[in-house]
Amino acid sequence: MIARLAVALLTISSALAANPFAAKQTPSDPKSAYMTKLMKNAVPTKNSQLRKLDGAEVEVDITGYSLKFTKCQFVKAYDQDLADANAETVLATQRFVIFRLCPSSSCGSCNTGYGEYAIDMNDYLEYTVEYRQDEQTEMCETCEENCQYYGDDAADEEEEEAEEAEEEGEEEDGGERRLSYDMDCSTCVQACDKIENMEANYYIDATTFINCQQIQEEDEYYGKAALYAGPMCASQGSKIKIGVFTDEDCMYLDSSKDVEDYLADEDGNGFKVSHALLKTVYDESECIDCLADKEGDDDAAEDEVKDVCANLYASAGKCESIHGFVGISSDYYDAAANQVNNENLVCEFIDSLKSGTYNQDGEIVIGGSKMYTNGGTSTTGGQKFALTFFILGTVGLAVYAAMLHTQLTKGGKADLSSQGGAMA
Image 1 (cartoon, rainbow, N blue to C red):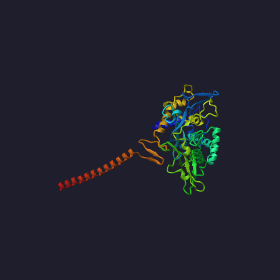
Image 2 (tube, rainbow, N blue to C red):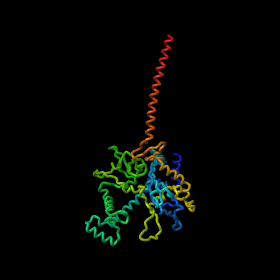
Image 3 (cartoon, rainbow, N blue to C red):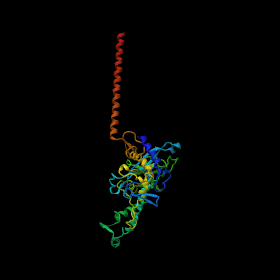
Image 4 (cartoon, rainbow, N blue to C red):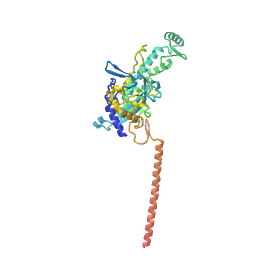
């Protein structure tokens, strides 16, 4: 099994490097260059509407789907560069995110007709965080434009609200003016005020650390090692948090440390980490609709795919046909030959990431089940019972062996004494 997983990982790394439909993109940093090309191969499908642009480029229409986070997983695997550099370890930590493209009409359940994908965590966070940041900025700009009255005296509020209701046809609910999306002015003003004053309230956004950042410099005099903050998988892969790492590539997690212990201003005031924005990229209840909003009032305009979905789809390894996401169109078999030949390996690899083959730190789990937490591992109830049983059994056997040894020793001496008496 382990050998097959190793082969799958190596095959995915090499075979999926070619990508005839990949979107143009730049890695977020040099250290992610290897993993950026690990999972690259966009695949046109029968249930997608393919269209050629200028007779050359091909776009895959996934406007009927929504993006849904599934799991985050670290994997420690052999790294030739570390071996060539005679590093202390030849195992590099690779970080993956599994996501699905679900039919938008059933993204909540997403149990049929979906595609499942694996992508480097850096790429996933780069695209999804940028999307959520843009969404947040747009929300606060809309709030500022439409909720300027909030906080004025009651008379001014009523007058302004009445005038704008007549001019703009605003929608009212319980006396609160509502924006075009499902949020009233009091809610959005409070939320945007917290965002704007985050630093003043001694909070720092977790998305600041989606690329590895140094949080403590090395100090030989005081015996301090350099430390770094970066994204980590938490809660058995269901969440992405910010952890403390001992290397500049954020490959080696130190789970005994808390990032907030190392965040302070020049005056020594400590900062807490706000995960509010980061949570939106891994919350399974928050799907991202891949259908882009149409500009203006042009309802007849052609449907477009949001960049976040297009970029993730183009960069990911794909497992589609077994989930009812109909396979590759025969018209594009030559261009997508890598996907056709390696889809089973990709599916096996994704299954291994989901099935507990690796623990939270990326180590391969060999035999037995373990429960993994942020601070390390703990045994299950069955393991505790088995351990107790074997300990008591071992103690019991030791006591029995001692008793048997004593009886044999005494019996031997008695026989010798009787033999000696007869000879005398």
